[in-house]
Length: 401
Image (tube, rainbow, N blue to C red):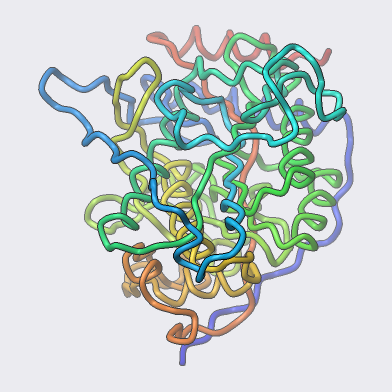
């Protein structure tokens, strides 16, 4: 049996009005290090997104399962779906319509039917714009959701039955909205996911400065058995020494994810940490969906996070009721493949093996140890053909309100 190092528990962190400005300013300072900036999170941004040339397309996803999920659990009441809250830039609603979570207490009629103060939050909510429009004007959120969708096809390929899986879309970043509001929007998105019963939160963003309010929300999420799968960050730093939030909080419900390339080598810009990053997953030039029916490639721990989120959702879908988050984390880590060159870069030394994670039952998991950590926050990149102009544009948005 293999054991993994315990996570270093960080001391409580303060909240100050300067936190957001410092994070966003840090993001602005790295904007000039690459070409077309593709990552939502801090990093070198040296691998651009590409619209695919004619003839090269991502494989179209199979439609979501049509089987009555009750059959997988011996009949009875229909099981509740596994709900993944994707806190990101929105989604191409039309392309993902069959996979979207639906708020059972809300109707798209211009009225706040469920009395939560949000009008028409049928499939989620746009917290940066304070409206129901969750369309994606950036591309990052659709790309992340596309990875999740394609990985969920593993269940059909293997003939695995289980609970349906749905995506709750919580938008906290929009390139047309001042960046100074993103931190508040992010916190409100976390609050919504917790209150509306998400099982997994996928967070592909982050920053170097912690927030006591955010940490408190994640403590509550842990208490409610909600898993946070968070990107470890794209700064190429050791997160043991330079924490990246929310991935670096000490709550036991966090899986912090680093990125590898197609040869299983570490992506140079991916953060790492023997005590602060849990697992690695594919994160280099990943092909996925973009708005308006396009496809393209992105690189970063954002993409790696989506692979782990899908694996965790498949594990949860086996159970009529949500299993303990610690068990899901242990299974993800315990079924991962160990590569010598990756040991020391994460707590587990493991690279995600989605097939083993989806098919190996909990009793077969050989890895033991404490659960996980945490990872990421504020989207900081801005598309531009001229990096200097991009830097200036973002800097203008970073001015305190």
